[in-house]
Image (cartoon, rainbow, N blue to C red; front, side, top):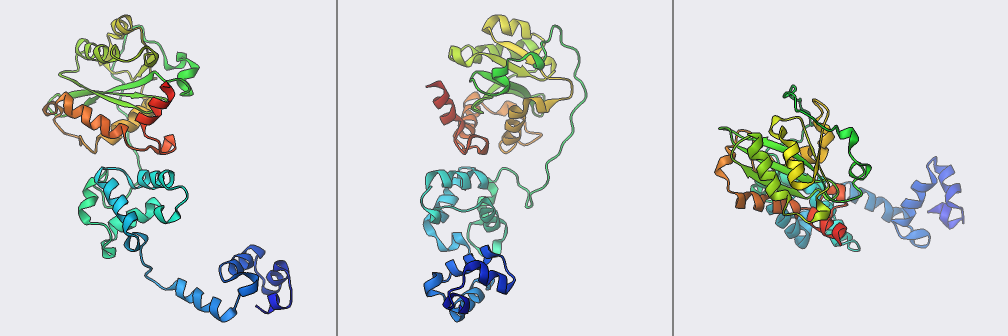
Length: 311
């Protein structure tokens, strides 16, 4: 305050206090500016800001709390909610918050901000977030006349053109299965009910669904080395869609599909009998995934992204 009264520059004040000029600048700006800065008032405000515990943003802002609870009930993740809020209310900072704030409001129940029941809508049921990790299975056998993923067109690799898909056969208990398909450019997902893992059955189901797609969405399909695609040549003849195969024990080469399979575990935990679900129910789950905002798409939903690239 005395430095300002004496007409010193911010750098001169910072040098005298042994602080960075940016620190002094922020201190003056948050406490009335160079004309209104008062030491006693600034000191009291600093002590007030340091008081703990602080009131939670969600506890103080009803409309924001309602929005967050609404999206949690629709099974959006906290990160998806935070990203969507920034897109929906770009000029209103009061309607924005970080995903960490949502997590704290859920896990620290002493805050009493969000109902504990909303935790059931989180993708995983863990009380703590943990580092991800996993192991890959050993090779599943030889498939004749495979075309390597390394020969896939560049447009598929850089996701520049829609119509390049990644696929997998998801296994449940009691020999139950479903096919998962993800479009690389938009992350648009399709789920297909199949009664068995027999290659003729899987290829027939895939062919039926792929042939319903517009021509511009039928360019290529990337698969792992599961024997369910042993009849890939018949699939290509029927759909004019070339199948490319990942390297052995390299599921990360179908990263979009692997990510989607992880999201599906929220609805179909490991050990679930998939035969009990109808195709209509699978379509409902796919719709829910396709309407969620995705971080990798700038928090645009896969459905909106696909519509935009097709226009």
